[in-house]
Length: 210
Image (cartoon, rainbow, N blue to C red; front, side, top):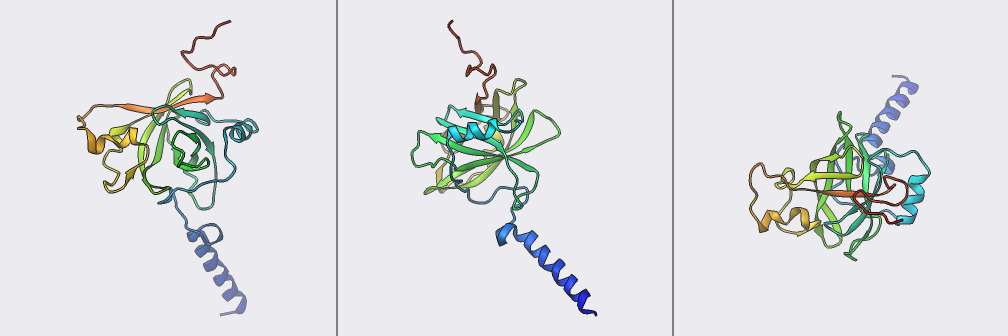
């Protein structure tokens, strides 16, 4: 075997190893989120608005309130060699009443489907100290106006463990506290606050006084 052929084979093999491990030798997660969440630096509502305003936005992108958990979140496009292109969006915490959660914490990921209003949503469901784990999958629906993103709890009720603190307790508390009726749907979700539907900071159903 010639020296050139040996070099080519070695280069291809090494490239495959890097692809399997991801960027700079880190893990490759494919089309599922990492086991543990990460915290991204430099996130606030102001920086998120600036970032979103600088590029054309998809309907699902924006800043959202999660009223059940008193959180403000940003849904944004992202790409990384560590992830499959299927995971096109991530959900990042901007602020929360729970001060133990840091701005910039990635709380979930979103993948598109053949239906423009249906998405595969992954949310971390467990809190181990200050680390989010246990990503649970459900189907999320974006309303026709793009102002709310809702999902149904029964689709994720069996996907969390019972031995750690719950993250997002309004979603997962029924696992240990209350029975669940087959076929019963209790939607929860996010409400968009930026960009607003009239580009003037208004929310649907809000009365504006002149």
